[in-house]
Image (cartoon, rainbow, N blue to C red; front, side, top):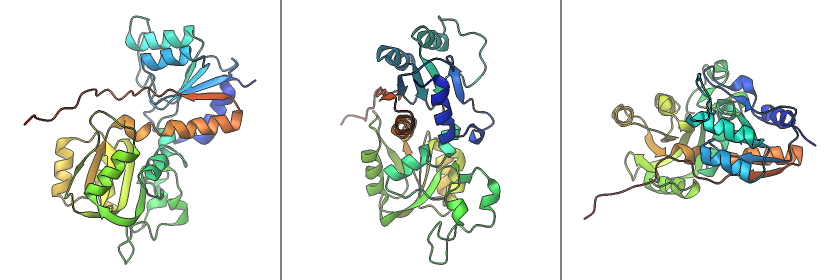
Length: 292
């Protein structure tokens, strides 16, 4: 029978820990590496409800994207929010592991799933894990096609975000609807900024919070940049500077589809029973527009 460590090694081969950002906290969070595992659960966030569901379905390990203990804490007492989660897992015999920015950067990883869902073949990363790969690489060729002159190593390199092209140009309005149809549904849906009738073909994506890459998407010749957690002032200034249209999705929606990828990897390489915890952990629960 497989152990927690066996599952950890499978995940770390798929999403190497050295790819994680310096500030990140990936890997095994709680649990005994030597304990046997027969069932592994998967989710984006380890909320209290997710932890309890993992216990209830009989999992011995829970794999998530967002680390529970991102920053240092001085207590995991059971009467604190994170402490309650940890106690629930340990009492229920569930180990917890996170693959975060290492899974964002890996090939294939979170960003490849997002790119494919919205209809592009995932090409070069917006920000390569090895910056040397991006030096002196033109954003567009003479015909105006982004990525056309990217070196093969860059086109398949690990890193944050992806750039690719739609099979044919469509309007921003149409592409926004395509994104809404492709991603898991959330209460407030998907919004876009830019001319609704603008034609878009070259698409940049970055799963999770990606407003720090607005200028990067512009420099790479994207017609539209898809990410999450966008804010008023950065988007306004980006558009006034001539940057590409932007699409803002719920953070959870842009990353939850990755759970299928990691589930399939663990299932194929271990033969263990697996289950995705389908709870929607997007925190927004109400959306309203002004009544007429």
